[in-house]
Image 1 (cartoon, rainbow, N blue to C red):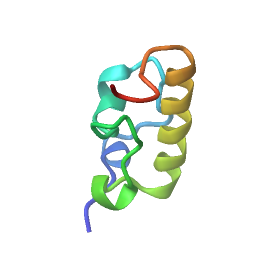
Image 2 (image 1 turned 90 degrees about the vertical axis):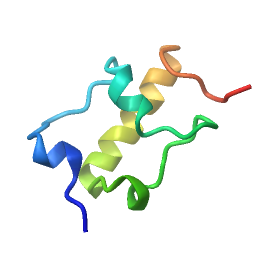
Image 3 (image 1 turned 60 degrees about the vertical axis):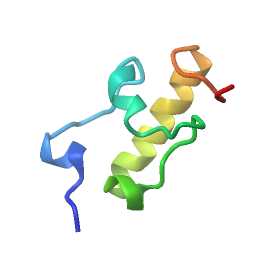
Image 4 (image 1 turned 120 degrees about the vertical axis):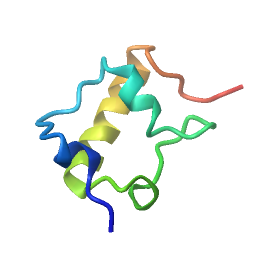
Length: 66
């Protein structure tokens, strides 16, 4: 089992403005990737999903790819 990338770096909160980090956890169709594939723990997966959704509303990330 992989260790969560955010836990290993002692990340307290995931910022929605950090688009470079968020893009790693989004598929080619702009969907949030399952935590089983990324190795993110449940706590950080919830924060990640919230950050991605906020970034989409702020037009930093796309809702869908064309």
